[in-house]
Image (cartoon, rainbow, N blue to C red; front, side, top):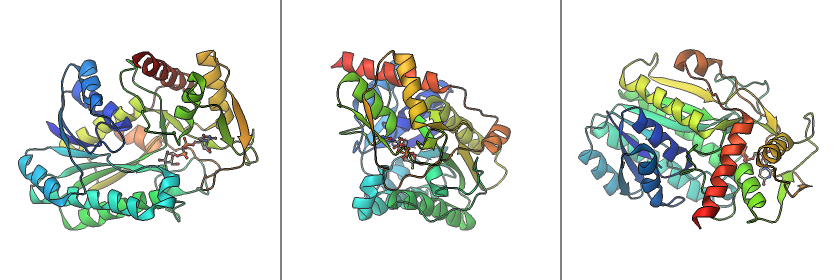
Length: 339
Ligand code: UFG
């Protein structure tokens, strides 16, 4: 079985490539390296013992993308990660986000259609729910006004896939991620943000290692037990494993509907301060942080109802918050050692 992983040198993509290889899948990566490094291919090979095929090009390039699919018409499926994902940047540069995230998806679907490739797993996000009225949030919760152009690209992408499935035989699984964190236990791959991290956990580990002076905690006046915002953090390897199950389900024709949607989270919400406490405990480091104003665009609290994914995919996130934070710290330490 051969799977295209777009964005396969990126954070979630690289962990998923490893899990696919370890489950016997052959993998081809396409990535333009806009937010990742070619060396990740070497790291993947060190873990799995198998070098994935890798082609470096931009999936917004129509000629190259359609040519790729022509050359790889034997693909059994596609897992589409490649996208821009910085919420703040999407507010500042909306056209960049709409162009990149939508154009690439459209071309991938076109390439699949032209070559009879039927199966696609798509990286969506819990951001499609905005601030849900009810928690934990289920897959049938209303899709609300997006809080950022980034979030809107995920909502539109889901619609594009659904509309397209209505008139083609393409089958899709939309995976709505909550907050992926942590790194592979080998500490050979992990989150490698280029520049200053936007996300909480890489900011924590970079502060503790001395790359940043202090962490800003965005807001302590939320309506939550300790006043800081709550998210459902999920270990990236747990998330990666769900992709293998999802793609397996499609290629083996086990899906119940042409388009299926699953929340991928743990079902547990943790506040920013709880994440910091967990980090301090497992790393034995004192973290320098200060409370500042809320970050515009942040929702107050969100965590997943995971029952549908648990029951239908037979998948459950296994790693605890402490395990997630320890693996993130080990990864930061490994990066320092490699310098
Ligand atoms: N936070 C801080 N300080 C920081 C960074 C983050 O206090 O330096 C807080 C945020 O305010 C938020 C929490 O930590 O309360 C998590 O923030 P992240 O930036 O790590 O994650 P988000 O929940 O904002 O965003 C993530 C993904 C998006 C996805 C979104 C869905 O990065 O791609 O989840 O909610 F769309």
